[in-house]
Image (tube, rainbow, N blue to C red; front, side, top):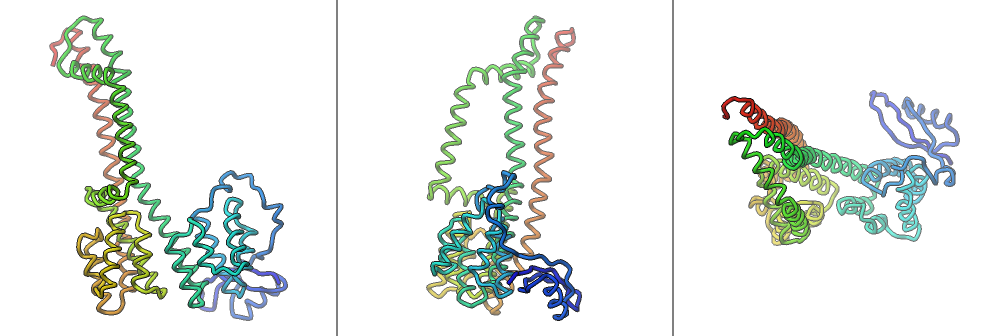
Length: 406
């Protein structure tokens, strides 16, 4: 029987989204009205011709399976599960409307379910699904609330994706501006200053100290350019190697948390990640030690991940969660204080969700402040470099024209 997804308004005026099985669209609308719902939008989820959907003119449709696919399709599958459709049928229906690049992953998942595998084990075979998502699905299968946890997993994927995007965006602009400023300085010292030097030498007048210093810097840059380029490349390669070597990565991530401005943003982002994910895991029924094991894998910052591993070991020995985290964990102090309060009151998951909202707001403000400060600083830096070059050139021209050098 055909399945229809719908958007409707109930008697209280609230909107809800779900799915319903019905022979026709008209009978589906009638059934919804009999339930006291006012249909606003209703569409049939039908199995499309795979041959017609096997290609797309949009090249972005062939991107590899990613978080956006999980976010969108998990919600759709949850809606279908609530309407009484089996997981296998829901996965097969997902194949009819997902983009070509994501279809192979959904096909493999459907095949594994058909072979009798659990949904958790099927997801674990794909790196695109985080340990957090897999843990939630495991809980949903055990409790029989798979539709609910899939909705929660979709929300978490969306939140994590937005958080990562915000952090990357905050760091991308200053990095790009700094590289642009360095490139501009190198270009002026190696291309523009030598031409100015030739012009001033033709005039045959002694150059002011500021102009001579600029020319000496340009000459040094031209003479040592290859060595500087090799050194910069070696430095970049060294950093990449050290960042991918676990012992040094631990120290780099620890020092990053102490950087001015940037460290504060990184600490806030780690705090938001911990409070949101940990709160959701605990509320879903995951035991503390298993939730901490999942959190350890979620943290990109290896120093914070190591503190979670340390806390998990202490919890296994009978300690509270707050006590081991209070020693240089990298999290914001308020989270640690409220974690202790939550453990004592038995409302840890609720308090963690409150801490998520509070620190997420602080994170948005910190990112806005960071980008707002960096933009004028970089503008002043670039303008100062260009202004200094022009000032040195004008002073030299004034001196050559008969004025006294500065």
